[in-house]
Image (cartoon, rainbow, N blue to C red; front, side, top):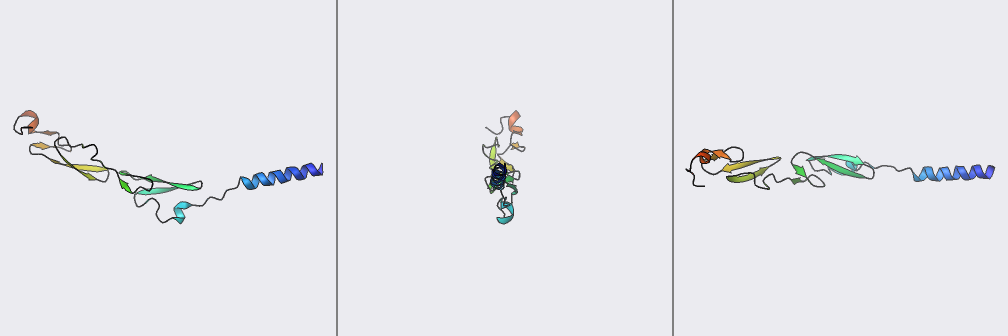
Length: 110
């Protein structure tokens, strides 16, 4: 009986040691792993970045191109962070250059 108890205790000790993992907080030891455009999430043996709006990539360092595909119907698009602006052709206006006098007349020749 004593031998069985020793074997059980030894098995439990091995299982206990093999199930113990010390997690290192990679967010604390790495200098700003998510650039300045995300929040670092500490996970078991790794980290992940939760990117702010308008940013993407493993470390949130890539500005999402809001001009792709071109949202400006009658104009040129300029990308911004989580936004875009359009330089409208003459006679067109609006956020996406999709309204103006050219809709109702043939003044613009478009």
